[in-house]
Length: 380
Image (cartoon, rainbow, N blue to C red; front, side):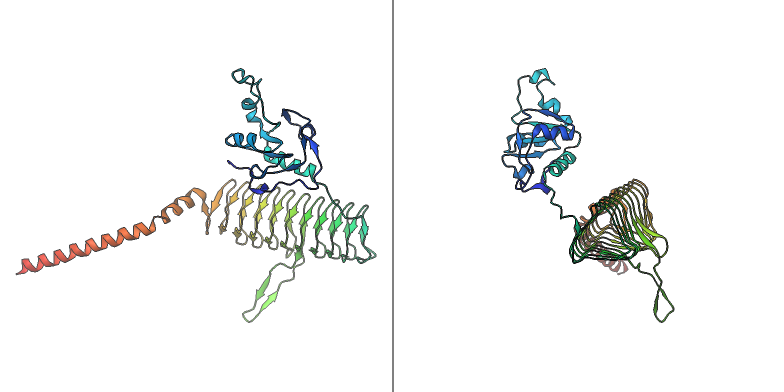
């Protein structure tokens, strides 16, 4: 990957906490080449550096760009130390880095951590706002923040240090773990379970009825949805996500899984640990997703399919059958990625193939006409 800047194309400096390169390296447990006292006042991608900012690279092809940029310091992979440290290669002794370099095993992750270190955290004032409605038998933990217009139902449990931004609805018997943050206008239906350190963004609805009906040939009869939803620890859920409760049992989202905006997860879906679901993914009822699966945008899965550990579903993939562990599939209906790419390459040749076919048809017609003419002559 030759670029590391697309998501960071505007320098971020205002309201950031200033740190020296040495302080950053200590927090990252990283090695420095250059002056550790250099002051860093913000972060930026290589295409938008400014004096005082720190940026990062993952590819040696960008090294010259990084060193000539206006950034005050660069985060680079450990593999570049031989290129940059004078002591590493005697033939290069005497070379000097033009700015401090922080070496780490994963520059992108290190850059994200630097942003976290330097970005000031603005937390709402702790306590319950006067306009919030808290039922008397609800349990509210220590150091909880509940903002304007929230509702916490009967026998609900809010863990220590949890934050509920304005207009969050917590249904009867719902459980929210310690240090969980719930952004405005989220609705948690009755008896759903949210783990510790979960982040749920605005407009998400968790625990609505699963889409279950039985037809008698005249009308559709609703199947009661008496199960629940379990969100395990350290999950992050984007804005306007819908996660339906199970018909019976639980719809489950595994620990550490990250879900983008506008994702639909149907009743009784089981999602493993550390999965990634990108925007507009849709999972039908009773889908099973094992650990470490990645689903690109708008992938859709039919009911009851299983996706194996570490599989990758490409953008707009239509999953109609089970996907094996580690498999990369694309297309609708989805096929292995190599097969999809071959088919896609062939499809681009279809216009020329159609022209060739028309030419061949014309040649065949001419040959047939000649043969018919010859037969008539022979008959005479």
